[in-house]
Length: 163
Image (cartoon, rainbow, N blue to C red; front, side):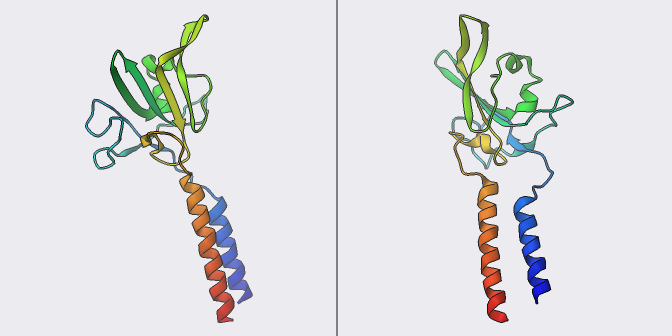
């Protein structure tokens, strides 16, 4: 019985701390497409796996780009690794890119370093995080870990009662 309990505890610890090796999945669309406006329709849009970051590495993020053109607002949802290959966005990408962070695009003008018509929001805590109207959401991996720990406690309690 102790051997079974040890195996079970090891499996729970491995499930909590070992992360899968699959890549990040993000929404990849523009607001000109149905279901990809200010609010994203999960019935019309699907996640797409992000390409690898390439030989230079770096962390990959889901990105939501908000661009103000006169009175219109254009929203683009994409993987950071793809935006780095787009000339339109590569030159405007903020130098600071971190989870749950929004920043204005860059200008190549030292007197006015930010383009306030362009905002980049980064996230990578859960697949499809660039669907959110804001990037502040609880991490799905944290929720799964909490549920796994709760299930382990319940199972261990049942095993203790059976003995």
